Length: 139
Image (cartoon, rainbow, N blue to C red; front, side, top):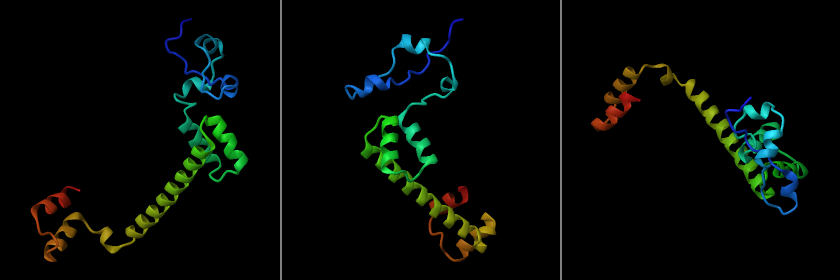
């Protein structure tokens, strides 16, 4: 039976450990390797996927875990720490935005229709140009 796709190369950790360079298994070795769920997930071994998966499992890893994650993702410990810091920061910002959105949903103006809001703006002379009126009515 002929395969109609090239399986993604698997990382060859032994060859990577010795010289410290990034290596993949040869095509022949990868071709002889058994099929599995890794064939169904494109980009499974990309560093970003590995780091993202590890962040979801453990957002605040210890130094030992950080070293292991860096090794698995094939990036430096500093890059791994920076990725985790940025991911935590984005998560915090997302949480703040969600809280602001929920607060805005409780505001009485949120329940009014677009036409009612446009009328209120024109009555209060808040719409000074046609451009802003068009933008507001389209959004």
